[in-house]
Length: 341
Image 1: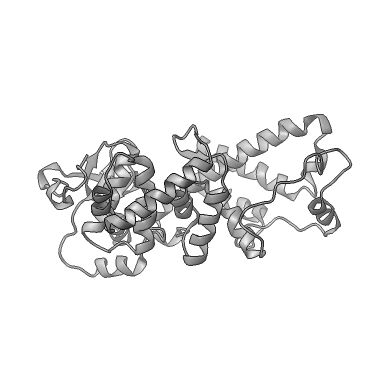
Image 2: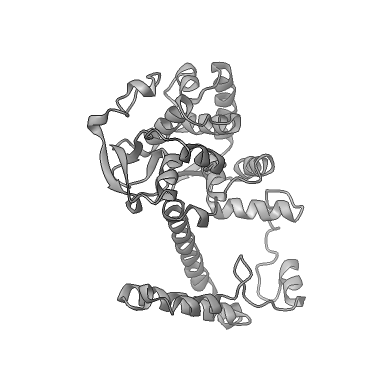
């Protein structure tokens, strides 16, 4: 990878001899250091340029964009089917560092919040780098990096961490991360859940929980229930009692439409019902739509199966969350107007 301190324009990234042309539909949105994601105004400005744009930087193994999402969106909006890329095969941590380095050196500048969040992440993934080296990569002062490093060191002493199956390090005690997520959500309300999650080292689902708590006027960190309360059969929590007293609401998507209606509409799409894979997807969507229509699915679970079904529900929830993130990544490339960014 580019050594810390090397200028990106000297790295050979834009060497014409190393370019390859690939289909736009084969690319995926990468791990951007921008908390707010793509800037649509900047995309519009680039689209007005008559001179060819430089190639984008892509991870060959995952086909995710390391640098150049704005240029990729321009190409997609212009109706182009291919784009010029330069491939790299650095590690995930080194690719993020490279993305920060490239975005500092050219194009739309990273905001102060973006650079600080990036510096925090680089400190955790590259602790061996000096304050001056990280400062040059992130576009901050060495004293700022030293301050961030001291704060990170204090937090790391207070909580242990584990490496998940996805290779990401997440703390066992998420209190500090939840507070940091709350700060970012307050400072940057337009930031996507995925970007905030990357910045603080949590899952998007946890960031969503923090956002909902803030909307309800609750603190970002959940209070731990008193031992022995709310866990025994017949001793329901206050939230469960309140939920039991509320009238049931029909299933709705985020946009307010009934899932069954949406699935029925999709079932008439020839591109889905004409292939076995498409029909399999329709069956899966139909099963979930029918399940949502059930007045109280949890009531059908017998007591001795609660733990098992709970484990399955969490597994399926994560599966659908990953699926949604993958579709969102594709939407950013194929149909930018459909993206959640």
